[in-house]
Image (cartoon, rainbow, N blue to C red; front, side, top):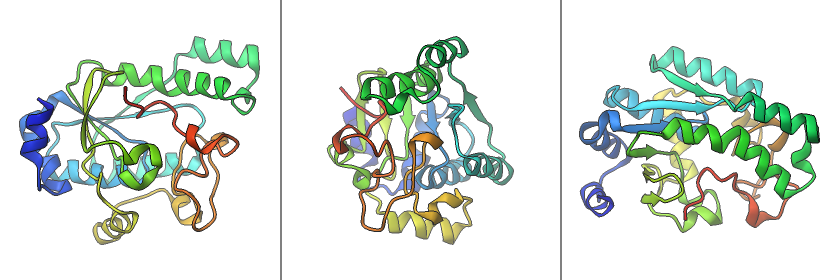
Length: 231
């Protein structure tokens, strides 16, 4: 199936890939948005192509106020339902009770535990029952992502992932937003190229790695939360 999809979308642009998935897999497809600029491009394309694809977001409980702002603006503009998945409250309560609200700063193991509870476990629920998972991943976002492909099998989640913007540059994303009046997170104008949970994200300096502001206290090679680590 993956080989077939790769062949059928070969040479298609992002909008055409979305249209292809919409037409062929429709309700069997889900898109995960964190309201970053890449995700906003894909939301715009989904809204243009139809409403068969389901959208969801992971509400970790630690998001920036600006993220809620663009979430609301996205709902207003596109009229697409975006289902919110929350972490298991008992798991969060146990972690915070035992280790405090900022345990993720203390070790990689603690940070991964927090990411699992707030992101990975809710993700499993969000994509369950779907065959195709669309993401906003671009190859140049990090060294880990350069080795991915635009269509791949995610063994950890038993689902096919398609990245319509895989070969896009940051400049192409920004031009698309401006040309089409796509709402985006104002933090992107303040030095935040990658935006996640508020305690784990900060602005970066010009020329820094795309994900330098994520989990900045850790080694550069460890900067993935586990959502997009393939096996």
